Amino acid sequence: MPVMALLGLQWGDEGKGKVIDALSASVDAVVRCQGGANAGHTVIVGGKKRVLHLVPSGMLYAHVVGIIGNGVVIDPAKLVDEIAALAAAGHDLAGRLVISERAHLVMPWHKELDAAAESARGDMKIGTTGRGIGPCYADRASRSGICAGDFLVEERFIRNFDAQLAAKNRLLEAYGRPALRRDEHLEPILAAGRALRPHVKDAFAPLRDLVAAGKEVILEGAQGSMLDIDHGTYPYVTSSHTHVGGLLAGCGLPARALDRVTGVVKAYCTRVGAGPFPTEESGEIGETIRTKGGEFGATTGRPRRCGWFDAVAVKYAVESNGVDTLVVTKGDILSGLGDVKACTGYRIGGRLLDGYPRSEDLALVEPEWRTFTGWDEDVSGVRRWEDLPESLRAFVGFVDAHSGARVGWVSTGPERSQMLRRPH
Image (tube, rainbow, N blue to C red; front, side):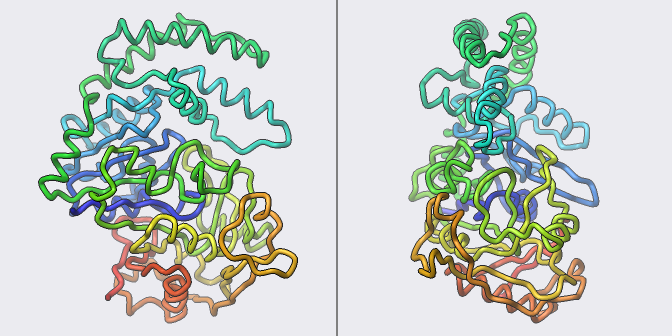
């Protein structure tokens, strides 16, 4: 059962896109399972940068089948533009991209309602990307959403569009926002639907057949485990289940089909938007990491908050997701920073916490620190484990010991080729 779930174990932006791309040379299919165009998975090949928001990351290989699962919320125009941009760059997705007919569609009112709700929160803003993701998932949960399969019968799509437009305009009116005009939005969405229609079908059947045939499949997580709506730092989370269970639900596979779980972590931590961040460095160290690491959102361009590695959060994510293997990225960014720190425990009022706290308590914790000798060497050209600096290898060993999952790969830069496997 060669199915691997790959997900981030922090607050997103761990380098999942690069890792999936690097591993996809030998896989047959990659499945996006949740999230939407709020994700930005960056892949760099031969110096050329591609940011994938909805298309599965492994599809830069011509042999890889890509499936956008039922758990994804799709912005039709964004997906059409992304497919066209990839085709212009020589990556034709015709005949190998499948869009689940059960995936829900992000409509213009979702973006308007996203902005209106965030504005109404005042000082309690959560830092949404404004891409309409939360309102789209809310419609799905309230059984009033529009699915990609509705594109297959335009009359049905138009009927659903008109009903939802009327209902959402009443909500926008309550927020003091202008109503959306039908003639401005309907035709562009129908045009996007016609472009996507050849890809829209039952996505479970081909996935089931790939698994039954023993093909290598990666389930691609978006965002990060600490942003899971149930298990993350609620309410400062995304609107989907970024947990491994969410990946299974978002593609339809049963739990027994899953062979292994791989987690991706940075050698430090970042997060975007509001929310507690125990290891945040708001001074010179944080700014240096941000600048060296290019820590600006691939989707929004917003600067990410930066800080030291949080081993408590990673252990919680490893245990709750059943992670077998870890990938450590961006150790190269910490080169030349001097001593490197990691949080090994949380205390409140002098009491060492057992387990991971809710956001209210997380904002109060005092981290316990461990300090490591840093490394000055440029590791961007290193391709063998034994050639890494001894101090970086020691840091990786600490991640092993504290998380309970073994580090199997280390990334030494953003390129596909900058990835080394750790010997057993």
